[in-house]
Length: 97
Image (cartoon, rainbow, N blue to C red):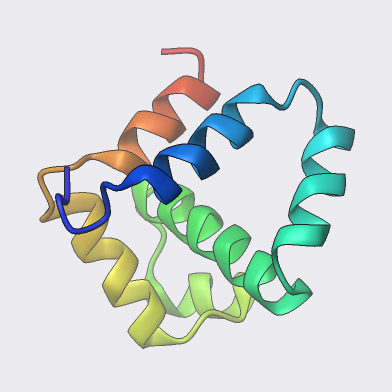
């Protein structure tokens, strides 16, 4: 875990997210919390991570998501070269593992 991120405000944000109980509640909260561009960027990164785990190539990911190659590279580094395994953790949970 990145100790630079850990603080009371971030803990409060994560507690708020964990308190949400439905997609509708998520939509309502994140619409207030983020701009539409920020939310689209977050969503795009998660889709890119999913596609990378499915062994999709950059050209296919760019075509399907509109993500830049820089974004894909950043997600790839986080996915495969980072010791936090955050993307893998979430994708495994979504896949029922």
